[in-house]
Length: 292
Length: 238
Ligand SMILES: Nc1ncnc2c1ncn2[C@@H]1O[C@H](COP(=O)(O)OP(=O)(O)O)[C@@H](O)[C@H]1O
Ligand SMILES: [Mg+2]
Image 1 (cartoon, chains in turn blue, brown):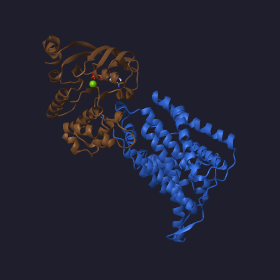
Image 2 (cartoon, rainbow over the protein chains, first blue to last red):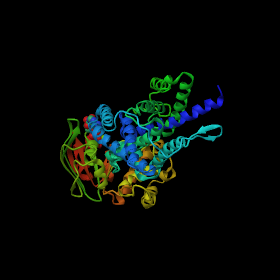
Image 3 (cartoon, rainbow over the protein chains, first blue to last red):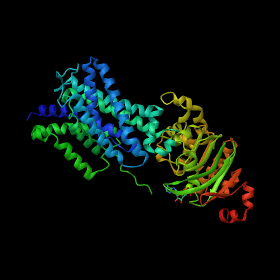
Image 4 (cartoon, rainbow over the protein chains, first blue to last red):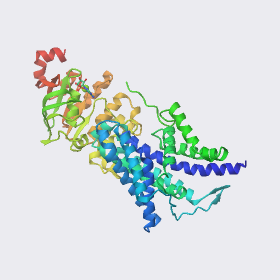
């Protein structure tokens, strides 16, 4: 087969991979502060996409819809923290696992009841007419995905390094008790991480919706691959999820090209199984050092 | 400045402290000594809110703080440098110090310039920390980490400082350095509650001391009084 076609296929897959990376990054944010993740994150992506679609239908322009959707995602994140995570953390129990799954199911049936089971197109002012860049066709829509994903991750990383609140976020991640002794409220920091994680998931939904359409199941495959990316890259390295996301996105497009579209999901699952078997800490994560 | 009355606390049902009473007057250094497992660390944790007291009172400047979150108590001006130092390993030395001042710095931007004077004071006290300000604190030696933990506590401009075994696991030369730092803090008028295994050295710097046994204060007095006490002499100063 023509090399340029293969490159084309890999490149457009890689853009999708960035969305997996973004959702995986959302897992990293809450894991850092609380060692918990929201197992209903896929529903959070989907609900935020539906909400943003509603905003658009009500006449909100794109530049207003995006922050509106992010805010909605952040609020959902805060709700998950309050309803499913906080009590479990206080009691040092693993109850958050089941509770976040249940909240996800609740979100799913709410979406079906409010917006119905059908898939809806997601209107966007950004064009999907390809432009030719060094031999590859790239659409402005794909570029918007890259800009959105790398932009928000860059902003959050900048916040963590340059502001004192961001450093406090890192301090809670490193040692929650010691951070409390500095006057840093770990509860508030965990809330912040859930709000950020929710906003990040909402952006993933907004970026991917014009490509996948919006429906209750829009994020079920996406979330599985985000898990793969998070497990392979580890729950610590933001750089890692981007690399693994790009790789997985390219790889699954190749799989569907050579093996048929039914094999699309195979690389993600295979990667997940391999990673869990070989490197439970992720290839980019530090192996946890056992103390004393 | 700090007053503890009939403090009870423990871990998940098992009571460790059963009625601790102690007081640290403003501008004084008070030593808390006792055997391993007596409950010294638990006392400090119960004061700073890391464990919730089941009974009793903790007063910081006459303000009851028992039952508040540790972060609230810290923001009220109580700085606790915990056992085992607990520096933020993945963060730089300077970031650790800046976080020490979290309670009175702006949380977004402009915090560095506002912390400059306090940073300078800490760097004057610990020149080695200034040399290593960009270094990740997890890569410091044990002695340097202890200096950082003390410096971080001072950054808060605290009303009272709790130091839990600052000499733990350090080479003898470094232990002497730690005690000379404590003497300088005392000269600077810092109010200090000090837990130490090296009872002799602790009594040399302290204005007042408590001896803890099985979750209770067994003996209290000035260092002179304790040095005359036969039992204390035999058990802790022998
Ligand atoms: N995190 C903990 N969980 C359960 N028991 C603890 C914990 N920390 C200390 N203890 C117990 O509390 C008692 C007092 O310990 P501690 O306050 O650390 O004493 P000290 O600091 O005087 O050596 C000991 O019997 C110890 O086993
Ligand atoms: Mg101790």
